[in-house]
Image 1: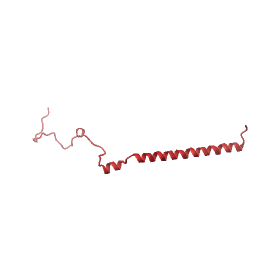
Image 2: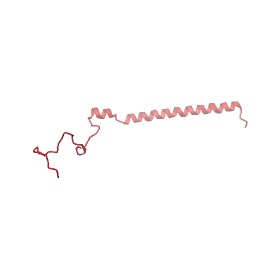
Image 3: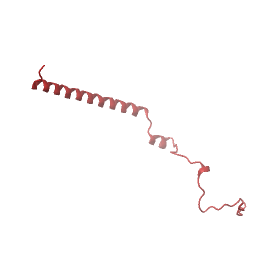
Image 4: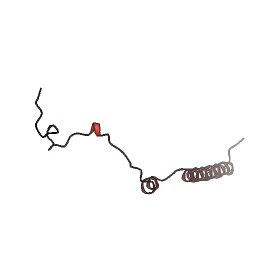
Length: 82
């Protein structure tokens, strides 16, 4: 089969039409996925504002002492170093 100019143009137009359909369907699928996610997910702003959940916590055990605190006992005397 000889490849005429008309046949080449036909193949090119067919390929462009196919690409447009693929891109259109991918766009529709992405919009559906985004819509599904939006319906199921809860906003972080909603959780922090409405429910007053803290974004993070820190254990007191791991907090460094303040620089102005001295190692004193409850009665106010400095503890002896060992």
